[in-house]
Amino acid sequence: MIERMYPKPGLRVLVTAGASGIGAAIARGFLDAGAKVMICDIDEAALAHFAAEHPAAVTRRADVSNEGEVTALLEAVRASLGGLDVLVNNAGIAGPTGKIDEISTEDIRRTLDVDLLGQFLVLRRAVPLLRASGDGAVLNIASVAGRLGYALRTPYAAAKWGIVGLTQSLAKEMGPEGIRVNAILPGVVRGARIEQVISDRATAEGIPYAQMEEQYLANVSLRRMVEPEDIAGMALFLCSPAGANVSGQAISVCGNVETI
Image (cartoon, rainbow, N blue to C red; front, side, top):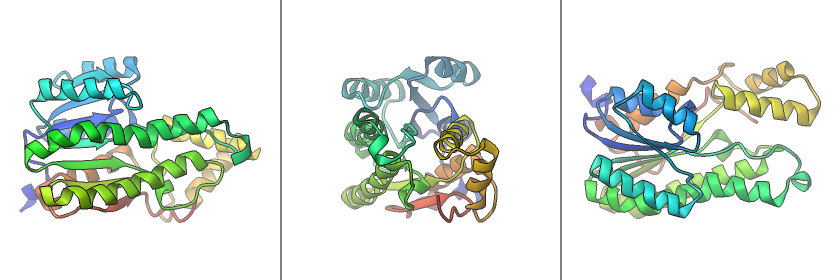
């Protein structure tokens, strides 16, 4: 019974933005489970570091907001992995922090291009491979900002709400073909990215970093940050036999963030 909680060995997995943070934790989890893993990222130094630590993984530079690079990426997946069983649509950026009338059009577009359009572009090229696998799974990484309003982070929140809508719609579309689609909504995840987010929010509100961090954690019922490995654990479960009938869901892994 316990083996049902782990993905079957040999899954072919693509993780976007997989060289660091949540993406790297998910990629490591699948590698440990015996999967064939390819990651992409725009950070070439992080890619090189990941490749050195995990020589079994295939690595490639790709910007998910660039349609040509996405097409080449999925061609590389076909050539390197021989197909695709699991897509982890993880790539995203934090976007600007500020009031709506202070945010530039360029910053809004870039946030939506990476966080939302990027998932569309990868899915368009990945779905034919997932369909051919006969039992494909998609994990779209969103955020608790996809279920809660997020003052001073409107482009990011808009993109993450969009990902939830994309997930639920695609689950209905692809379910009859046996492809499961779910979204994972991380909360305050420990790492460099949340540190920058808290710093930018503290600056925007004119308060010290420590005070802003305390405010973030005060809004979490468990009063602690989530670890990247917590997100990876949910990803592995959703791609295990035990998760075979979970689809169309937006699952928070956040310690119960009450408000942001």
